[in-house]
Length: 443
Image 1 (cartoon, rainbow, N blue to C red):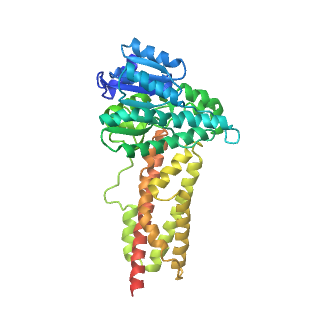
Image 2: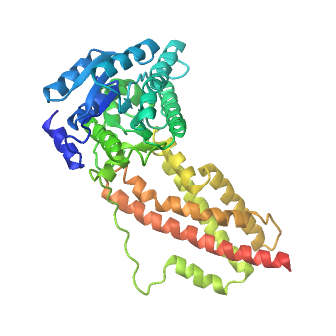
Image 3: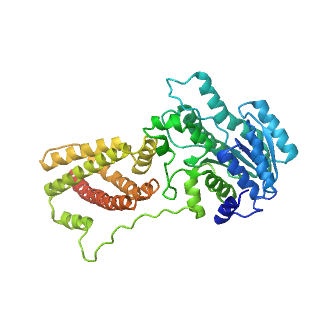
């Protein structure tokens, strides 16, 4: 155990002895996150079993023993049922009953679907998905009997070109973890799907040369990707291990049955912080855009309100078009995450929002001309606009995860104020229009 890692664990409140008397099993513990996690748990007092197919697993054990810890190496192919049975027997004999199971073993070849042979696909599924199933099946019964234990299933980022097999298994492992959590309930056994982040490991460096071009990036640019402003590039593997250790010690129960990432855990632990630039405060007495819209709407008749709403709806169309363009400027592998985040917070996919606002604009244009139209469009849009505002309010925080550029973050913060103001103004006036429509219908 290096001094720097001990200091890192100390920084997040993890002290030697916190896991004394517990047994931790880490699959794929020969290098990278697996090795660092094994060392971190050992430094906290756990007796560690390293399950690894390569001889590098023995190097991890030597590192732990040299630091005064207890560890064994069991050469294991987690995709083979007989190997996992042997692993369970060896760990139980030499260390005791497993308290912490970290499923970290992976295969991650880079290949487009049209280039990938069936053998490669099957091998990835066997190690990444079947391996986790076999280890859980082997070690879970003791956890259930004792009503004590934690399983971390290591998952990964969203879709990337060239990693279809790897991503398919990792997303499958996420669903597996959530289903398993439901099976064991909440009585002392915890199952968490843990996504460490973009971590600097021998594995990611090994695939960078083939993967980077598929992402439209140079190898150097890929290896300097940061998904959090605290890092100028990839997260160090020791930090990912610290996040895993903090999770199992402090909050596995809270995240039972959920997916959580390393950045979130390290923020909670106080190691990482997000600093979002402050938006300029409102000037006392100055009429803000929303106040102006509210005061204006009181005096407007139906046609004028429709005209005002039409202008705001067209403004929202432009905002959504800008958002689509901004998504397309993101690195290829980040785009699915951005679009998924938009849908989860805004209630609809971006394309669906664009269609809805296009329909709203057409309806408001007809209303302004005194023509009939689809009476359901206005209330539906009004109901959803608050969700859209919530999404845009969160954009500065999310952007701060991907860049440290203070000027750019300031620009995003100011743009957010303008966008949210326009959305709130449109929601307010649509509510008034809908109220007038309801009165007219009843009359």
